[in-house]
Length: 411
Image (tube, helix red, strand yellow):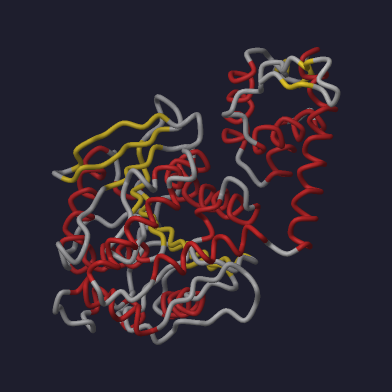
């Protein structure tokens, strides 16, 4: 855009802008490799796998249209273009870090905005019109974010369930099944494609994102049936069911647990592991925690949780062990990674689920992040805690894919 100077006597002609798809993670990856001149050390510094780091560097070079590094068997060197970019990128990242620090210290305008969006969405969920409002606001919230540039997205039919397939690389295997959140009444594959895509990049594998049916039009077990069909379709495409990892956030994590417990009950093929992001697994609402700080906390009451649960269950018994993992026998389930924010209103559910799984002999890892909002992973594109959490989830998925259970392991 052309702009007049203060006097109106001259114009500044803007140069072409940098490609919109260049992200801070690309620049941080480049600086780490440029400073270390070693992909292994740079990957360790960033808590990434080497393949994931290499993908980020290749993506940046592709977006810029030039090579930044010369790679050989024994050494890594900067090209002239890379050398020109390095110092400027250091300044950019320094300015961004300073801006984030100042913004957080001043008062958290973004946190307040997030809280207001979610509070507007919740309302009185006893009224059908509020379910429509919840759906609208959920889509609007997720619509503010775009999938990573390197992820290719295409529609598929997974066992009769309309779904999206997100692939970070053309030949990447599809190993993740992502079941989105939304209280079992809202959310969609289209809306969640940014978050599922970010996890696909972190794990280096394709992700299947089913558009499962929602309550109250389709009460339980419609969601579980759709999840089961999509899972079995994905297992049929893989060489081994243990190569599949099932992921869910919020109520989607509850659906993941229902899927695992149903598979065990039916003696079906269990996946290699499961990732539960801010899991909402208590339909009674008894464990809801109120925030005591000024973070972007979603104001949810036990009554609202029970109201949404009633829409979801449609008269089905709430104490059915398949949908009540906090009181179910979890013996024999595959390894679990559970992540939650320390200020999340469902953090106690995450802690209790981890404790119960551990007591039943499940290999479980609980990670708590200093985040005050429910579903903090949604903000992966600018929230450092969310980006770190997804990288850790991706690393977990990579480990599961290469792991095989011992002969005497039940899962």
